[in-house]
Length: 221
Ligand SMILES: C[S@@+](CC[C@H](N)C(=O)[O-])C[C@H]1O[C@@H](n2cnc3c(N)ncnc32)[C@H](O)[C@@H]1O
Image: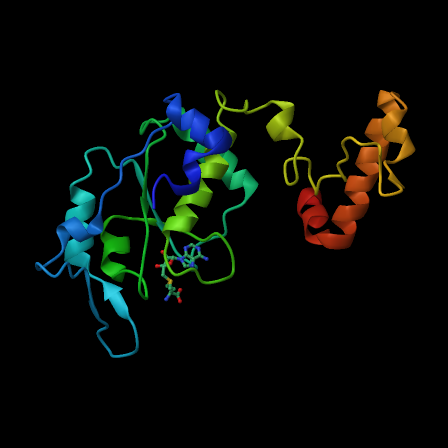
């Protein structure tokens, strides 16, 4: 599963260039038997299996420099761009920007692991995935692209985007200037930077108000 989608594009090039790196710990290597069992039935009954505390504890203890441990879980706060910026900026903190991303399967993991290791739970949205690996890739992709030495933390490439500009992005156009009888908005061909900037701001405000009024309220807080 790794690097999976992280092997391509901007994030893949950054990986190849050594700007970020990862190690995979296979939880099955810490299975309790030769069948590779890492899960068991829930105490209290109920459908679905739970990942065992002893297995996960051994897997976590095998990691030399775990940094901050994050468990991907629908119960956590939902990842947003502001949080992404925070995680990415932590590269110069005591852990050197190291994270251990714990990916659940089945019904999830034994609560005691979360409690004993003081693990942060993090969700990527209000839906249920079958495993945490995709969530981990979402986390890594979004963090790596805003790292200073990748696209440039403060560069236009990452600063001029939805959620970074206090709302959603304006409509984008490229060549050809006329396609199937549809022209791009005249102002974009005018070369008048002030007018273009005003048009983009207006478009961004209109789209945000229509689709995500909650973002406007959030910015006013
Ligand atoms: C089938 S889910 C378990 C869902 C759990 N029983 C619940 O109701 O909250 C299996 C694993 O996928 C991951 N997962 C599922 N949805 C997720 C989400 N929205 N965000 C982050 N991780 C998620 C978690 O690691 C979880 O342990």
